[in-house]
Image (tube, rainbow, N blue to C red; front, side):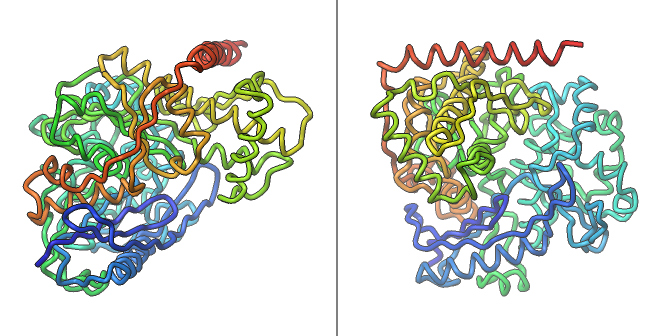
Length: 527
């Protein structure tokens, strides 16, 4: 009986795979690294064949670890970062690299080479931008495609297929050119609530009138939870599965995480509107669902049916959070390589220092965490980070104070996002946190106390894989709907309520946080 599914999560540096039962139990998992090429500042590239090989290795190991076999796997699902894969008319790799190596055919999501192109899109003020927060991010696919056409015209001329990375995976697995609704509405300015979904006038305005023909892009999109098809013989052999295995429509990784984090509410639209998913790792994404379209200026969206049927999704986020803490650790004289052990040592020392100094530890240090731009709510990829209140202290305790206050700044950034969302009519009161930050006790405390929200920590911290497994289970008929699958597979979570005694302290920090934004703007405006 095919009562198991495989979920694959393709992140920035690795591919992970897990085998799940129909009730959501994770029987086995594995991870395999992915190569990244950084030829120059703001450029980041993958080799898509290396990514596929990493996926195949991870799936084989996960299935072996689970103690199951191909005969019980009903479906495989993929989620991935919003990275752009470029192939020629015969499906072969085409370079996206200024170095010219054909194997580097994928522009990674965090690549910011297309800042100017993103600004150009924003300046058009086209109506499609009202479905992406009134701005275009360089992390979206249209600016990347504009850059490719302008700077690597030979690759553009030879192109036959453009894929979001999750769609590339389903193509490799099935041979189907179908594209996921999750990827198209979120990253390709495709309007799923309209017919046609592609807005030809926008493509013409930004110089991509030939995009659909050049990229093999279909008219329609496949919703999350639907099957793209079954595995080809070649893919089945590479993955260690069999040809009867279905392949579910792909998802953006953060949205898979949102589905996993909020799975217990996926079938209750009214309750879902009060829940937020905070997928927090290298960067942080806040994902909200609503039954009606709401204003989302400074956020990504609202996107229609990016995950759940009939629901609008809005995404906000911070481009560098875990990455920022890593940077603080590595740049400080008392720091070093930002290993998990060093982070744990810092967190432990912070707890000891707070016993003596209280919550005012490092209180004159203030941090704006925009070291890789401000994704939300300012929607300014050019924004810079700010640290105020530094001394000549180069000790380890000095690093701990800076780390603590940087963590406060990250949490204040989430509060800034939530305040703007409430201005637009969203009703967030509960944060479901998933990802690497769950392991950091400093951040988990601050997310609750700084925002004033109840925080839910999942009993199984594999929500991205779980969300992909939920969708895969529907794609092969194990469950009738995403809501039913979520109710059956959600593991539950632990709740943390905010400490009301700290409200005044963090309200003051928040006022200072907003003042720093004003002061930064004043400095930038001076001639």
